[in-house]
Image (cartoon, rainbow, N blue to C red):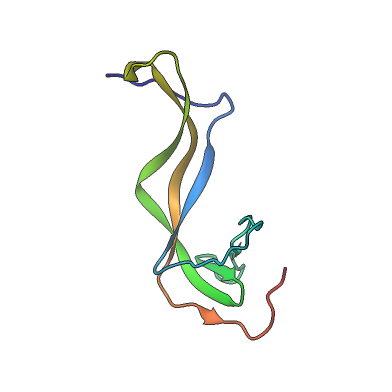
Length: 113
């Protein structure tokens, strides 16, 4: 079975994957939606280092290229009820990931907003 996959006319967006060791816990209120998890920075002094600041914690990691890229697909629609009529569009491609393996360090002062 062939499933047609197309891309947008202007090309596809470049995405990145964030890999964390452990668990990311968020306490959510009734009307509160998650719009931002933290701040991701690449310092000028250390171009290979990536810093992720979440609340009062900072964790350092590095950017790693993936051996095989991932394609992000979106189902465009189906013409009929059979599986052969399904079409997908490539929304983005993931070629690298941010790898965080160390434990976070606590920040003394309040982080910048």
